[in-house]
Each structure stands twice: as structure tokens, then as C-alpha cells.
Image (cartoon, rainbow, N blue to C red; front, side, top):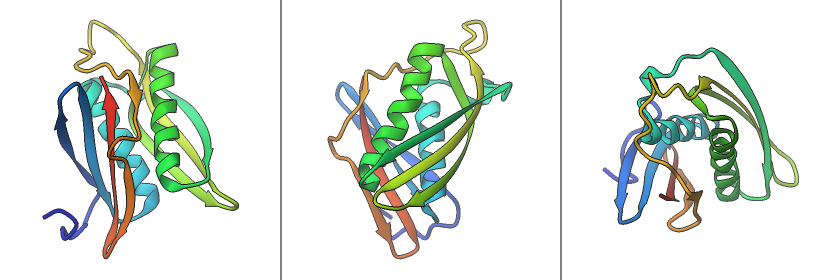
Length: 148
């Protein structure tokens, strides 16, 4: 299935590593790839179904390459959690290409409520270990690993 899977809708699979956590994301478009990566990021951390879309955070990040952009994007989501306790339920993404890449993201969610949100995994950092973003015949695939 890897690399040959027909991509009809964005999806992801979890990757098991000792002292690490990660996922492989597949999507039809780059925008969808980054949206699904945000969903996977939050799904690993908490049951996203318990998160309500009460407020939004706008995020703009830049990078010269797509793999760097994925790390910066997910690092920004981690920063929002670490500094505000913000958990996302939805993600909207648009991308611009110039000298590099610019991602405009809007995350819908709410602050951590210990009575409703059980944090299952706490990330330490987004890593470059095993990182990839690549074009497939029928879409895109990315893989990312986190230190936990």
C-alpha cells in the first residue's frame, strides 16, 4: 500500500518508534497534506472529537523547502499548545510559492480543559529524523517523527 495507495481523501497512519511518535500523511493536494498533518498532530495528543471549535488561531510560517515548512508548521502548533494550552479541532491551509513557501493556516479549537481533554501524548519537539514530503502519482505524502 505504501506509495501505491490511491488517494481519494486525506488520511494518515501512525508510526511506532521507541521514545518517538510520528505519522505518515497522504493527501490529494499540498494544502490538504498540511491540514491532515495538523489533524494527525492533534489526534496523537488528545481525542480531537472532545475539542470544540470555540476560537481560532491564525498562523503564518515560511520556509525555503516543503519539508522545512512541515516542521515549522507543526512546531508552531506545538508552540500554541505549550504557551496557551491551545488544542485544534480543524485546520484550514493555503500555500503561496515565491522564493520559498509561505503557509497561511487557521486552526479552530479551544484551550485545554482537563475535565474534558485527556492529553495522551506530550511532544517535546518536531524532528527532522525520517522527515519527508514527496509527490506521488496521485497526490502527496509526508512523514514526520516527534520526540516525546
